[in-house]
Every structure is written in C-alpha cells, then in structure tokens.
Image (cartoon, rainbow, N blue to C red; front, side):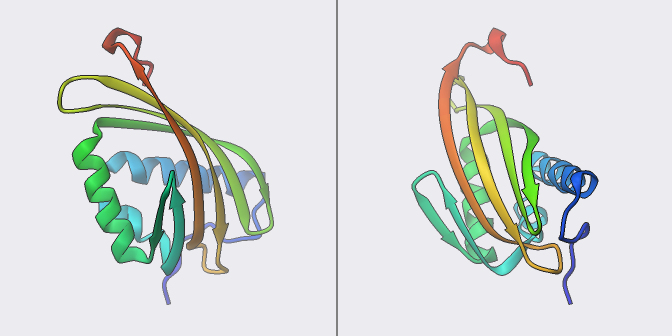
Length: 136
C-alpha cells in the first residue's frame, strides 16, 4: 500500500512538514517524484485546467516545467484541520524569451488516510517582473 507520511489528522508540526515536503518536491522539477505524493485518482484544478489522475499530473508538470524555466517555489502554511491543508505560495520563473514572472496563489489540499493528496485546488496569478526584482 502506498503511503506518504506525515498522515492526517494534521497538527501544526505535521502540517508544516507536509508543506515543506511539497515545496522540496516541486523545486526538484521531477514530474514523477512530485506525482507520487498524489493518489492514483487525484483531482486537480490548476488555474482553469482540470487534471485527473497521476498520469495527467505527470503530463501537466512536464509541460509546466518545459515552459516555466528556472522555476523556484516557496510555500507557506496558511491553515489546517483534520485531513486538509491550505497554503499560500509564490514562485518565480522565466519564459524562453527571458521575461521573468512571479506567480502568487493559494492551494487547498485534501489527503487520504495514507497521506496521499487526493484533491488539489490552486488559484494562481502571474505578474511580470524584471530580473533584478527576483526574490527567490
């Protein structure tokens, strides 16, 4: 059986651990590694895109990181209760023309009893920035 500790119900310490593990995985930019934190039938909303299942997660992340070059992410715990966590995040990336962006957003996560994320709903806004204005 697949497991991804820490497991719900979350307390402040385990919720912070879960957020840091997610940040570390996403910063690896490894679609397979990242996808293993999600259930086989995971449901996502990422901006206006709806993604279902690990295979679609992997495809989405491959497209994302082929477009979003030099990606760097920072996540922050916002709230938690039982098997749910809400995070605030920002990340920076550049496109193939050299234009940098900072993306801001919020995610709502729901986990199964094995610690795998079964739902991820993300609201994200991109803001063009100058290279010298990068923070991450």
